[in-house]
Length: 329
Image (cartoon, rainbow, N blue to C red):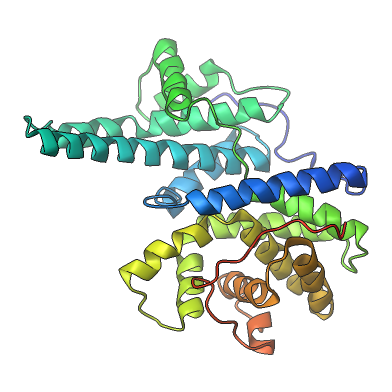
């Protein structure tokens, strides 16, 4: 496959914090908090169903092969997730309408096979669309995409590739510039830097990227651990699982959990200070931050973690964490 010459993430070492005016940071943080609150309120049904390990791993490896930035990987996963959920919802909606009208049912097996046969094409289209949003100096070309698909045994034309991109765009009403957890992580790190965090933001940033990859790859087990801990029961009911969907879509909560876990890995003596700042900035309870960081660390380093140093907090499900931007920037 064609491979750009630039090594992946070469700009990572050049990442700089503290270069943005505080007014801009405050406005951006408030905007992210509002977006997050809306996403949490709208979370329902099948959301999160397509953040499976094999799918995420495929997107990450493909992004690495094409020398794309980390942000593109997460953006592509979120675009694909929302597109596939829309497709599933449309199929269910059609089935419901046909049952009510008692019309002849469609061949659902054929629809499923069609969705399955086009999945890799859709996935690649989502990566290509995400690359176009990243202001990448070299957007992934159609030739590169077609050559990659050919190596997997999928023979498509440029017209089919363009149609696939258009299908994704239309399905999502052209709203593909979706927020990702990385945006929340980097904005909170920016604020922590201004608030005098003892652990340097650049140092935390590198660890945050590793842990964010881990949570994406182990999305289901991490959140299952969080659910079991929050309800203090090893066998959650279906209703409890359905209510927990809103927690899975809470990127502000994920971001504070990632940063807290990174701070514990980097310098556990500063962990309490970092979590205190995060609580002040976001309004998320310290107990919720500790519980999430504990779940992340358990699935990563598996060592002595914050959850073993402080009481296990009660009931994330009963009281979903609130993401709010305070004026403490």
